[in-house]
Length: 486
Image (cartoon, rainbow, N blue to C red; front, side, top):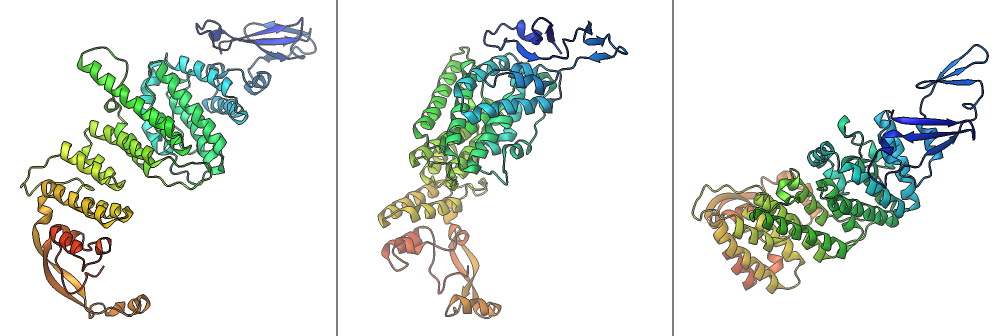
């Protein structure tokens, strides 16, 4: 097992020396010998037989085989000693090694010993940087951890062990000597962050946020690309801890790095940095960022970021989607986030359907009715009628160029209610007479009006106001005896 055991009879002490550790070039790798008092081993009646046996010359001559007990060995190691590489090199089951590593990290996290953890991260990242297999594995596999890294859905998790057991990702045997980003996320960062949220512990959540950011920085400092899951977790933690300045700085730094990388590529200059579209998980990562920006959390551990930070996060995610060629997806998410003007700008610049072509197919979530619904949602948040009118007029001008077919008049059958019950209770009781209480007529109005049958009259002073009547006419709504049955 690449472990040299020295039994000193003089002081009745056993020394364990990791042979692979001794020949390492990194000065920060843990090299201290681990001492353990073993009184029975130093009995004068025991004779050592190479390579790993002891013969008891007394009695019937029993033969003992020396095996390594990691639990006993770890009891002798100080909690702050970085023996993670030592554990990873041992010839023991992966689950056992994983359990011991989690225990060592948990001890320092619970005591909030950031100084020791920084040293550990430095050693772990240095060894990780020498494994091309591990880098390739993390680059391709961590997309599956995006939903967990967003910290949006915690489920019924009660403790860290439950979280760790939820998704076990098999790491290739060739990565066994290093701690991958996937394992750091799954074993340490994600369980601790989710548990802090569950318990409503803001102090621990901030500590895990600082640790995750440090791990991210250490990877980039050695010109390695942090996985999309780690990037997502850093954003989610900064978002939940209310670190507005740090999150905006993080997003701005990433965009600046992309700009520099793009220019160096255009000039055929070498660069170790990647663009966002080089990552296979870029699109699901950007979609997850939209979910984070729209999240309304109520736990005691989290603090809301400012609306300006949310807008920057949405802008950041939009840049990724548009850069990856997923413009329609960007528009869909912008509309779902209530960013109507940004969605219009993206459509105007990046997507230009030929005007007059009737067979233009719009992606789901980017049709005229989706823009109209987003405009209504935004109007409900605006305080004055004039602002709402400007927003709807802007939408009308855009749709005239974007999808003029939405205003094409179309005759369709509409069911109209002839009478209403005096109250909702009676209306339900008489619902079985609906066929007798309604008429079906043919109404000619715009395609958009048929798809969105209810115009928000109450937002513009009521149906009788001049402003409302003008907007209804612009969008192709026609007045009829009664409102369509909903």
